[in-house]
Image 1 (cartoon, rainbow, N blue to C red):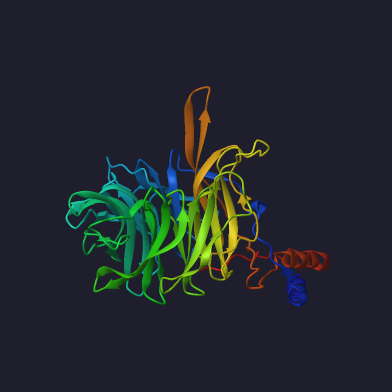
Image 2: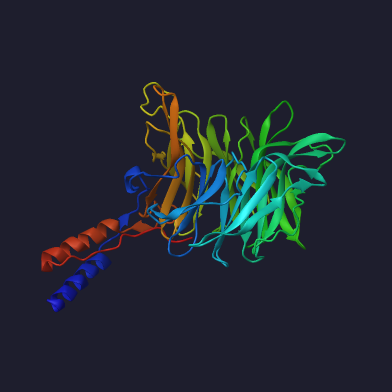
Length: 458
């Protein structure tokens, strides 16, 4: 019997080898597992993958800041744990950045609208050490109206750059809404809580009023960060800008910029994701009722013109695109929330959509797949690649008119199928594995279990 089982496995494997591979297909809603609910009353989640075992960290707000470890199927690992100090408040999304050298995350958030706070989170342990004050002033002026801090880690420098928006007093007492940057060492120490202003070349005038935060990612090849923000300039006309930043002797230094990459009628902070294949960046932002994007090279120059990254879905008002680049697939995997405004459209609540952008062009090849319950208000999604699976999380809320009360929390879905690799010509052999298993059953009655192909780890 042992000999026959081996023979069956070999025959099945041979069929897999000699059969022509099938074309790959984009991920569809049916490729994702069931909706998982967690984080009761939580909102504004972010998810960042970590170690090789596939563990990810979800961070979210519930007035205070919390964390939750999850596996590749969004199963909860342990209980949620608090990251912020007691009796503090944050209404904006926290974010996290994975440090592969130390096997830790740095979590950052705004606290009481006046301080960028943070904490190191160790894999499998939770919060480590005391809460950090990352930044609280610029040029002697304390912060106010702070929003949306993001971090990007530079492994070759063993340092994070944290970017954020805040209001300070500049010049002769005028208020300035600007984008700022500050370094955090990999061990969690902060060289200085005095932040560098990045969004305006003339801090005394502050003609560019930044709104809704600043985002950041890092290029290892050029050892520079790209910071992006949305700002208003004259009569509230809004524009999206970027700036390249370097680490010069521990000082946040503007290297190239600022560069305007697109007009924007709504001042919503952009997403920025580094394309490691070509060493360039894709930035996306909300404009009018759509999500637009622009490519920026490693010298800070815009490549071509801005483009609609989700023009194939014209329903409602598209918001808050989040991206992660999959180098193996050469795709930007993207999520956003959208609203249906057509009376004939059964989706009347804000919903979460997933779609894929070609790495070479940033163009979308397919309509977004709806991942959330169409009857539940679902917003602010985020996405990561954990091990070899795609995980998406978002916030949800249901309002009960009879009781005049709401129920809310976090939800998510995961998929471990290979997405479309159209730009690279790669293939998906899922169907062939099934064929090999059926042949093995017919020949010997033995079940040959085949692990389905998954997304390669970035």
